[in-house]
Picture 1 (cartoon, chains in turn brown, purple):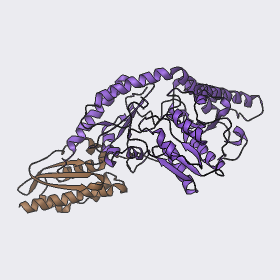
Picture 2 (picture 1 turned 60 degrees about the vertical axis):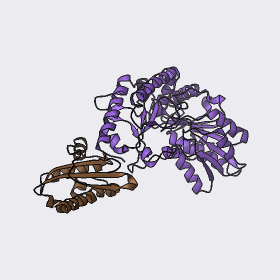
Picture 3 (picture 1 turned 180 degrees about the vertical axis):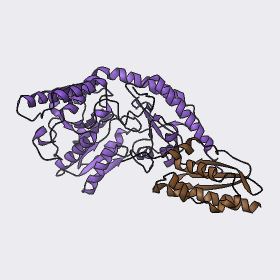
Picture 4 (picture 1 turned 90 degrees about the vertical axis):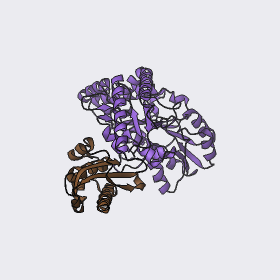
Length: 122
Length: 387
């Protein structure tokens, strides 16, 4: 049986993508070419703080919602906190089906790349 | 009927709403003729008369003798009974069967099962527009070919095959010709008795009748093996107590279709033109399947750069189908569209709009607006190709 595939948090994050967009600041990209998944994260870092976070994403609703989830969680925090990023709570909050794990892990890779890009610039 | 405060329903190829006249007839039968039509008493005979009436109504719609109709639970069962029943009945003559890659799963999976049982199946691929060239069938026929199964109207693209020509080729060769008519019966006009068709499957809920009931046309003189056992009903070919209320509903749906089919078709053509006219200027949009050889109640479109599942969610409250596998949570790209040459991404981003009796122009306008804004939004979210 096919039940409701999306929970309320996913619907909210998918519809209200307040952090969709781009910055000219530090950016990182991630791919899952086999499934066409693409994520771009951009950060505006000032005095060690993530003043702004933006994302662009091509993927299923879980991918888009996960990106928005990440941006809401980390915007305003120290950039060093990116070290603390874990994908599991987002997957739990969005009730990501197990077959989509590979897609969502693109976000984890992209966050790591973003953190490294920020370190490289400082 | 198709627009409610909660949803805009444009998924008629999945199932149609129950026509109010059908519902009324079913309620009447449920209350006054709930008897077993096999019972040999006045009440049973009352129910049997209703079954006979339904057969006459469906026979009149199709242009066939009601005695050539077997009641089933729907098109899936009809397809199983026709294909397995004919293949097994004739296996002593040969075990070669032919069908198309773009058939519904209710046909594809039956042939796959027969392959596992030792039958040899040739899978025909249509042209990129979905139409099967007659010569391709002619080339595939062999001395031991016993059955050919080709759907009339494709459930995903609306493309219709020339069953008169295809059937004539089969008949000249001596192979039985089965047609899955789930998407065509009650929607497009044809005289089944005049066509070289030996077996045709149909289901009630695709033409404003109830779910859970269908029929299989078996041309007089064609033998099939039963697939169910346990009673003497329907000449032992498909035993089981007949659901009188469902059959009454199916019969009523057939009677309504006879009188309203042409108006329904005309309306569908108008709505399709309105819908396509409202979205065809979107950059990169492509219609899947032949425009000339398609049923007007279905429009299937593809955008290669928009993710299908996100598109479907962004379209809510519009209810349409994606190019993902039917009923699949895996979001596998449609094998039908892949067979027409679409890439995985193109197939996965396909949207099937389907509409019919009860769909109004306002619903189509709303669909156009929702589709255009959803596509624009998802495109704005996507990183550039160089990202």
